[in-house]
Length: 281
Image 1 (spheres, one colour):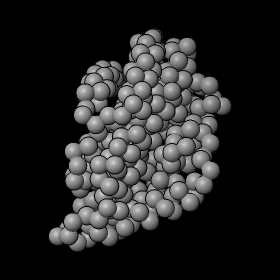
Image 2: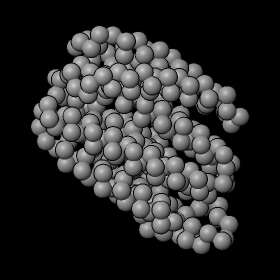
Image 3: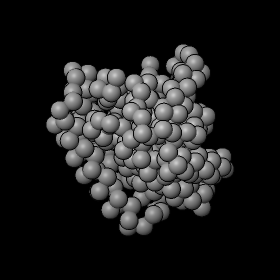
């Protein structure tokens, strides 16, 4: 199981996985302190992991807010609580690996902002779900998303390979699946105003366009093609759920299909990370 799994049960050896990943990222950052020198093979490989890991905070911010909203709306409360606590745990675990030292100053600043925004979101999610905290947590999740997106873009620019963009694009699909589900919940709760539906339309169009972009990309493997086909199939189910009236049945369908789509998109991002590592190695 990959280190970046969104599944409920952690992979065996998760602690050693985090240690090795943290050490690799520190090595990459150390090399980047001397930009006049070419990146070592280890640093180049670590950048692929850094892009995926930092991009992952985007999805986690929205997944946590989605699950928090489901608790407020009483959508499958036991399962929603499990998803929320898992997302919070994964955010905290990711922050343990987030080493801001050694990166170029602007990247380090952005990573520090991710840490700060994540801590603020976690404090809100620890409160009992209520109308005010639901809306505030959703807004804070968007702020965390924005900081993680800026950090991901900055890391992508450090990678000496255009395929780094594919890792970023695939990783963003994870976030879109969760923001769509989060916004569906806001609409069902009568929160967020008319802008929520507009954001959902925009995110749906972006998701489908990105699937087409990834399918047309020159870097591909049988595993990537299979994951893309599965992602397209899961998108059909998710999109149908999103088009339902925001009633309890619709909320339950969106909750279930968003989790399935997230899992597929997470696997796809890992495959692109592996492909990037092959290019950079």
